[in-house]
Amino acid sequence: MANPEDDVSHVASRLWAGALEAAHLRVELFGLELSEELRRLGQLAVSALAVVFALFMLLLSVNVVLLAAFWDTHRVAVALASCGFYALLLLAAAVFHRRRSRRQAPPFAAIATVLSDDERALRELL
Image (cartoon, rainbow, N blue to C red; front, top):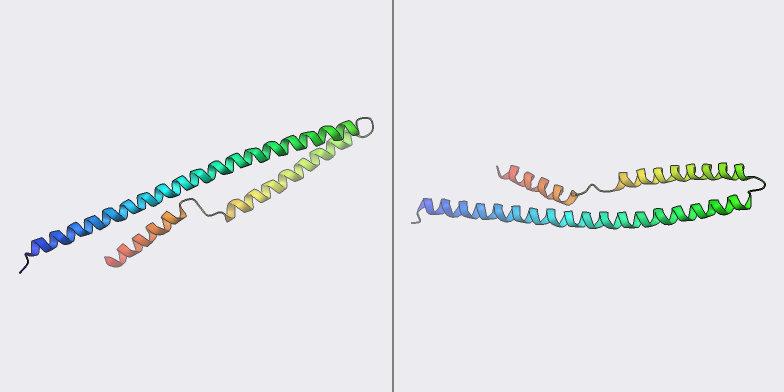
């Protein structure tokens, strides 16, 4: 007949190995999600800077052309109209940004889901 202490130590070592493997998998998942978030954030920052620069240069050029074209007749009206246009553009961009930020999933959502599943499974075992 097998020694009960050997059975307990064998079960304990298997339990410990399983816990270590589960922790290792969670750390790998966290690292993967962190690297994906950093890559996504970097790409988003570069593309946003390029769009903002291009838009700024375009709007500056359009303003210069409009002011030059209407310098002798309606320069104040053109300047005020361009300010109104920029105010509307700002409002539209703010609304778009607010809607987009509300729809986006929070970072590390997958690791949070896995950890909550782990917690539920442990509660069921105990």
